[in-house]
Image (cartoon, rainbow, N blue to C red; front, side, top):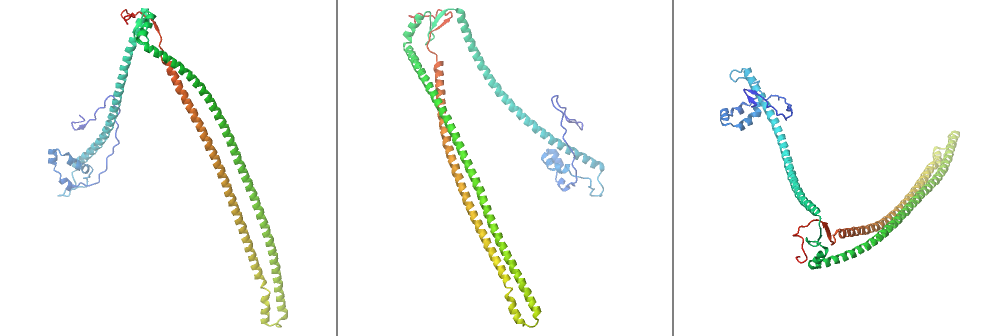
Length: 434
């Protein structure tokens, strides 16, 4: 009994059991006040009398984890009795530990039930294996009895040391070969003719099989020769196709380099032409600016020397005639710059168009070459598959013919058997009695 005389004694483990696993346990804190209104609804006497475990389970969590340390007497407002609080605390801790132990034991019980189910499954599997082994043992015993009988019969025949002739068509034996021949002619005349016909047919089949073997060998050699020739041709064509692709790539790279060089030359020429034009424009601009400065100097000199000889309206009429050359030069330069910019853009557009056209032509050539290569590969692959299928059919025919030859060679032919055994007199029969 685990509980006896107000003390808990843990059960002693069996000799085969391992050390008991001590579950990690720690008491919870208690901060909730008792719900006296809820507890007042419980009839303790009825619970004790009827054994109402459901009511206890309903209030178990609240009673176990509530704190009564702050409770006071409703009449005198004095603190509760410390010994009573200690008793309640001990009861709560005991209940909490028992709940933890119950959960741990439930988990252990689940593990043990799972282990029990696995053990039962293993037991059922072992029972099936034992039944299968018993059936095998029974069959082996029967085979052993049959072989013992055969061995004992052969030993008896060897110990008898007598000559007799066994009929190849039935179980009868005769003392002389003449009796056996007469028995076969009387009782098994049709069977002997059938056996002779079978022998003739077997010989014909063997001749045909030899011919088929020769034809098969010749066909196999021809197929191997054709396969080697096809493989050589395929490898040669692949090499040629690869060399063609390499030539196309080399020509493409060469054309690309030439086009790059041509474009670079054209760009250099245009650049030189632009530089030449710009130099001419700069020289003309500098010349015009020098002339403009000289004119301005002349105007300044005339104004300072003459003084008030000329009127102001005459000076203003002569002055704007000369400085108008500078805006004209600027407009001319801008017009030339726009013209060369438009020319450069047109040249670039023509180059891009020609480049895209050539690239599209190269892609078309590559695609056509790739399609031709794929088409050739598909044709030769189909040819190889057909040859392999024919070779497989020839191999299957050869295997079937070998099986037929083996069956014909393993089939027993009628022959006269002679044994040195002593046959009982009741089994030895004369031709008349047979």
